[in-house]
Amino acid sequence: MPTRPAARVALRLPTAADAASFLAAARASRRLHGNWVQAPSTPAEYRAYVKRYGAAGASAANIGLVAVRGDDGALIGVFNFSNIVRGPFRNAYLGYYAFAPHAGLGYMTEAFALALDHAYARLGLHRVEANVQPTNRRSIALVTRVGFTREGYSRRYIKIAGRWRDHLRFAMLAEDWRALKRRRKGGGR
Image (cartoon, rainbow, N blue to C red; front, side):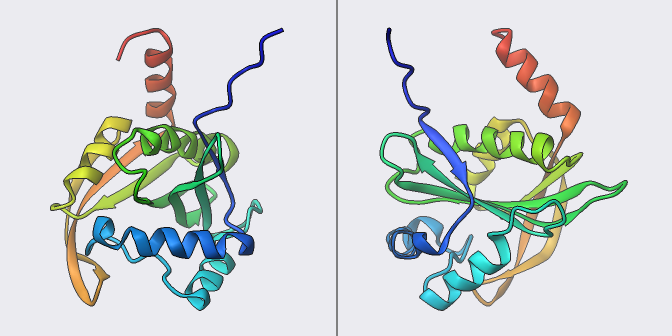
């Protein structure tokens, strides 16, 4: 009987055991991340990251997921749901970044779909927002490829690397994601 091939990517919570590989991946990705994101770069920053994003409970306000390659478990990227609001709003902000040398190989597109499945099915969210700096063309291409809708422009929105930076606002609704998945499953795009 043939065995089923392993998935190319999987998501899981970050753990303390990931510290060395996470920090090495972040260090190797500094040029890739540029001024767009500041991944934890010290053991103390990583511990704070796991403390903030490592919870999986239904009441957690922040949940982080590391994307790993299916065949060897190599860290390929990160998805952070923050400021999760439940109740009638059911919204979260999503930050994400890839690790070199895995950027540009399609892993993040696949992992993004898993992150959205997690957001809508497991977290029960209705809306996920992603904010991207206008000069980050690769991130804009990714969020657009996954199916987010551009909703606006926020001046001096987030302070990154010591500077207030403008951002484009994108969002995905649960019903949009379900419709996209049905269309893709049916063979259309």
